[in-house]
Image 1 (spheres, rainbow, N blue to C red):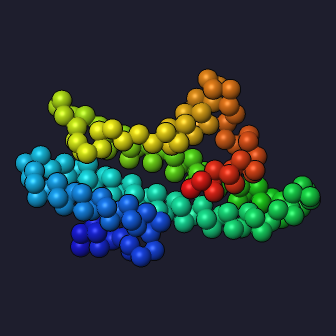
Image 2: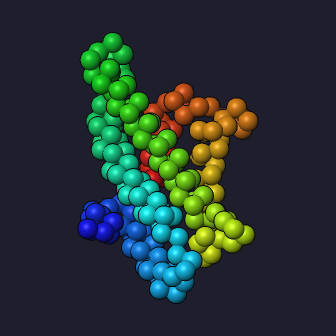
Image 3: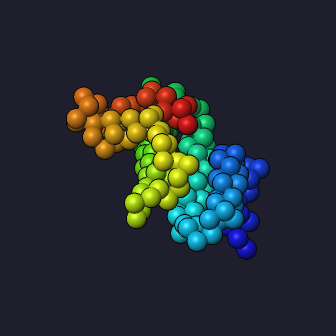
Length: 163
């Protein structure tokens, strides 16, 4: 079984991205077999699969959270406790998404031995990814931002909708 067999492309949130990367890496392997970065290819694919899983989780949590907004009117209820737990878990997946997506970007633009591992991606820059990661997750104190958990569900839902 290859890594391609482990991905159900028809259901994957990143199916088109995975398909494009698969085409890219196949061409790379054929054209430059001595420079083929197999460990990096496998990590990118693994991370894309993780991102797809995370997106599925976020969508499921979003559905639950949106169906429970009435719980906000009853802060001492069991439903409010469930709502809080779902929000906490969803925020965990959102933060994980940005960290893993940033890792993919770092691999794709990495220079090793004086050359780009993936030359076609040398100018790849995901500005939105960088801004969310830097301003909300990594360095909110430097950007006048707040930590993600203190922002409340409105901003969380806005971030989910970007995904």
